Length: 245
Image 1 (tube, rainbow, N blue to C red):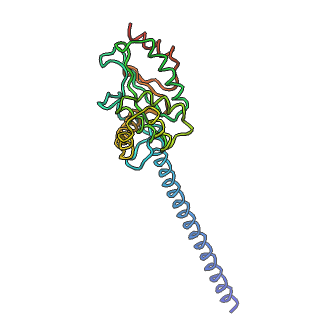
Image 2 (image 1 turned 60 degrees about the vertical axis):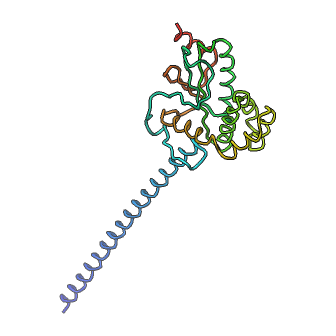
Image 3 (image 1 turned 30 degrees about the horizontal axis):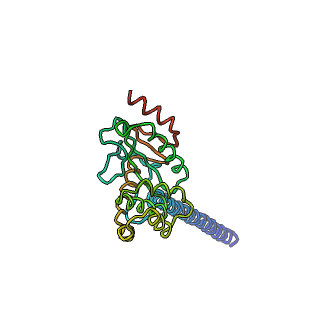
């Protein structure tokens, strides 16, 4: 009888041990599944964050999604002159500079000041500059559109200069005031802005910048050679001189 009870107790203890092992096993599996789900969710959130930053960096609207050149390779090697690009200089100039910049970037403002100095040194037969206006904010996007609307009335560079000087106060009203100060045809200008006639042009520049792998502004292509960052007019002049020779 005693032996039988001992066997019964041992059997019960073994069952309890098996149950404990089974409980630990199930708890371990649940923990593993939970960790896997947390990892999957974190990766999805990370990807969404990267994608949203890409759009914010290169465009101010939801119309198109863009790849971020910081995490993807460039899709094209060289920029092209588009029919609606703003240009200064002859089509047959010996050197062409593609200039990518944002009207609301302080560094781009300083870079444009250097470009003005550069234009005094070279004739239109020697140097052509092609402006590629990009935008990273809603205000910058509106400013680029307005400047292209001013270009339709042959006042792009004058309009651009005032926008650069008033970078901290750019909004719909101030952009209209600049147009008035330049004596633009306000009916034509307002129609251009309110109907977003130049919207596609700014998107086009943003997409081109992304496709070229541009990851910082200012950015230049000088006869198809890329140059990243700020350059003084003397530094740009040395590059131009080496190409002209």
